[in-house]
Amino acid sequence: MNPKEADQSPVIEIERHGDIAIITPASEVESMSWELMPLAAEIVLAPLKREPASAVIVDLSRVTFFGSMFLSLLLRCHTLVKQQGGEMVICNVSDQAQDLLRLTNLDTLWALYDSREEAIEALS
Image (cartoon, rainbow, N blue to C red; front, side, top):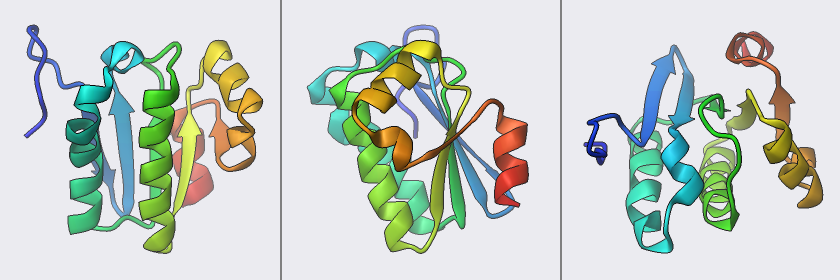
């Protein structure tokens, strides 16, 4: 279901911990083109539409920076999660990504956690 790169690693992994969904994008999202947006959105949103989560954690441990394309994907995910009555948070945010989130005021929309464990604990 996930599109694969030449090395066969998923561009975006989604796993469940009970009612919490954890989305972990690979570093390839840093250079994702607009043409891949519909596919990336489908990879992230389809499982959440089929099986809503009470909370979504976006784990950015493999991503150093990202641009407007990925921000758009995060906002689409946030909108769906909110419509379903859930909460979305972000963890393992690099300094560069934190700067971007601060600059766009999105750091006020999502809680930021230092680790996946801290985010799971906060949402449990």
